[in-house]
Image (cartoon, rainbow, N blue to C red; front, top):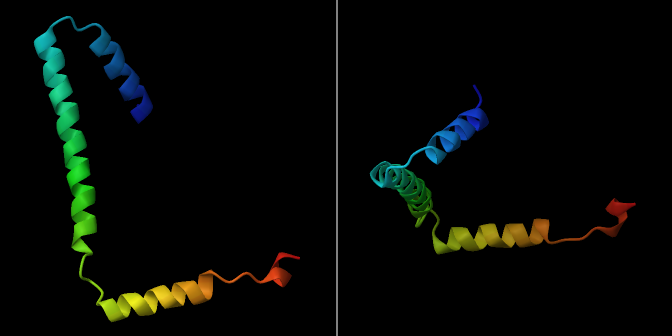
Length: 77
């Protein structure tokens, strides 16, 4: 069974639920999952803070500007 198929089955099952308490529980589970994903992405980014010194960051930015921001017209022919 594919993920898409599972999602459709869950949606169909939720459409049949008439109890608000059950829907609230499902809603809370979805909200918790969103918060977990949000916190994971923030943590990964936060882990990178301070990895490079200012000097190293400057060298990398200079290298990017020098190597990536050049247009060589002859290469497009």
